[in-house]
Amino acid sequence: MISDEVLGMFELSNDLLFGRIPEDKYRYYVEEPLRLGREAAEKVKGAGGIFALYEEAGIEIIYQEASGENYGVSFRAQSEYGKDGSAKVLMYKQSIAELAKHSCDYVIGEEEALALHLAHEYFHYLEYHSSEIKDDRTQPYYSHGFVSDYLEPVQLVKLFGRRRQAGILRCSEIAAHAFAKEMMGLEILPNYYDYTWLMAGGKLRREDFLEKARQFEEMVRMR
Ligand SMILES: [Zn+2]
Image (cartoon, rainbow, N blue to C red):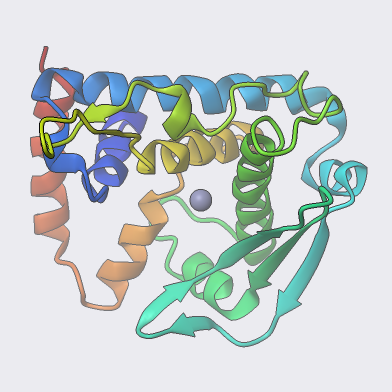
């Protein structure tokens, strides 16, 4: 079993600013988003499941048959937010089915994979509706704004003597994974499936993945 912290490190390491994070802060940038995601999942538990939440929020779900492939980057779900508070989520069914097919040792079905992506996107909706558009309806579920803004920024190189700072965007992803995991009652942080998919496609060797996991295990314990 690969821990949430280690899979969180996998996500964090994909951040463009990963190199700016001090080693003794890895733990913070992984544990805090995990906590925020889990907390929000706990709060929506009485709301009747992910489809009920979409209905309550009036979020439109649009199913696309084609895979979401664009310039070699494939995506499985995408959210669009209107300035009026409206939202729609595009679900790329083929890509999601592919992921379910290669769910490997923590098997999920297509329907479950779909709900998982809806849950992930719903967390981003909560982020958006607690920062860009203040929404009284979703505040009881989650009220911290974008996770990457809520957490401490990292220092960037000084430019003309001015201090520059930036948020770690991948922390929003870690929180959304934790939210989806908790809501769906999954055994593993769902970005795991990004890697089983890569391994199935021959783009990542299992031993390399496990070696990385061992390294991240050590890094996330550093203080
Ligand atoms: Zn996301």
